[in-house]
Image 1 (cartoon, helix red, strand yellow):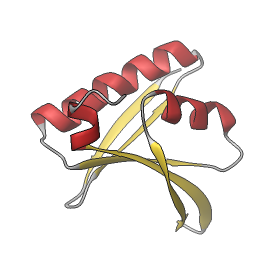
Image 2 (image 1 turned 135 degrees about the vertical axis):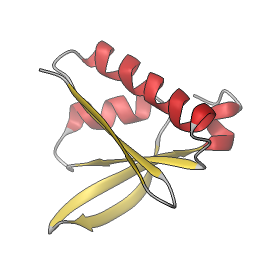
Image 3 (image 1 turned 90 degrees about the vertical axis):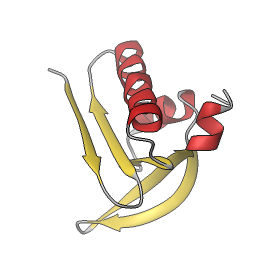
Length: 93
């Protein structure tokens, strides 16, 4: 089962994806990145990832996201990975 979602906020967009096949997951996320940066014209996209979720960390790194730190999200510690518009549009990923 695959779930993709995009949540809008004033500062940035958060994109979350879950899929059982890593290649499809990164392709779906790349499509979401393109949409966020070119259509929605967002300045930054982040992924909140549980620290023990190594497959999602690898996907975030594969699509060009860099570690931004750790945050408390709804009472849980999460890793925050992100990429900015300039890095994405310059082809740095």
